[in-house]
Every structure is written in C-alpha cells, then in structure tokens.
Length: 198
Image (cartoon, rainbow, N blue to C red; front, top):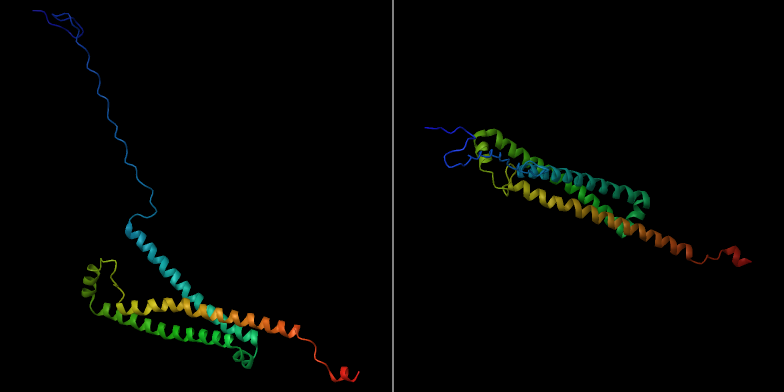
C-alpha cells in the first residue's frame, strides 16, 4: 500500500492545494470626540462658576456706577442749590442713593439667611447628608434655601435697573446744562448804563 506524501500525486492524480493563511482581522479603533468637558456635570459646574463670577462683577459695577453718579453730580453742579434745582440731576442722585441703601439692607438679609443655613447644617450633619443624597434634581434649591433664592433674584434685577436709571438721569441733566449754556451764549448782550449814556 502506497502512502501519499505532501505534494505527491494521489491515486486520482490530483495535487492537494495548500490552505491559504488566515488574514488577521483588524478592528477600526473607536473614534472619540475631543470634548471640552469630561461630562455633563463638569459643564454645569463651569456654568455655575461663570454665573457666580459675573454676578459678583455686576454687583461691583453697579455700586461703582452709583458712586460715580453721586460724585459726578456734585462735581458738575457744584452746590446743593444748583443740584437740587435741576430735576434730572436730583433724580439721578436720589436713585443712586436709594440703590446703595437697598444694597446694604439686602446684603445684610442675605448674610443673615446664610448664617441660618450654616447653623442648620452644623446642628444635624446626618440630616444634611440625607438632603444632599436627595438633591439630584437640577431644580432643587439645595444647599441654598427658597428664601435665599427669593431675595437674590429681585436683587439681581435691582443691580441693573436702578444704576441704569441713575446714569440716564445724570446724562439728561448734563445735556440740559449744555442747552442752557448755549441759550445764554446766544442771547443778545444786555445794554449797560454806560452804553445808554453814549
């Protein structure tokens, strides 16, 4: 009995074909987007930081604008008689002073409410931990309170509205002084006793 070696002809004269080598399958690597933030929570944190920063800047600029209106009104009109004799200038100073006073009152109230919330957290850490665990809702006020939210939101509008009104009133008062000066310069000269005698 004859055995067939690899490459030899068999009984039927056919040559055994070599099996092709398996082609290694290469998987395409998953493409990852180059995102600015790691996750949604990081984006929200950055948004909160920006909101806090710009809110602080708004508060600072509003107070500075109010101080500038008060100082500018006194510098332009010089005396109390001239200042309060101009309706727009008087309104500008009154609105600026009103905003400064309201800012002090509201800041004191916010500090008081923060103090109450801090005492609340310190007295019962376990309850504070439980509230944190149930504060997944983005609409939740935690760790602030509804009272803090009710005070801070109107104050944010006051920071914009009152200083803007004060600046506009002072601008109108300044424009009015230009008109008055133009009328004085364009008025005909008053005849003096010397000119009448001549």
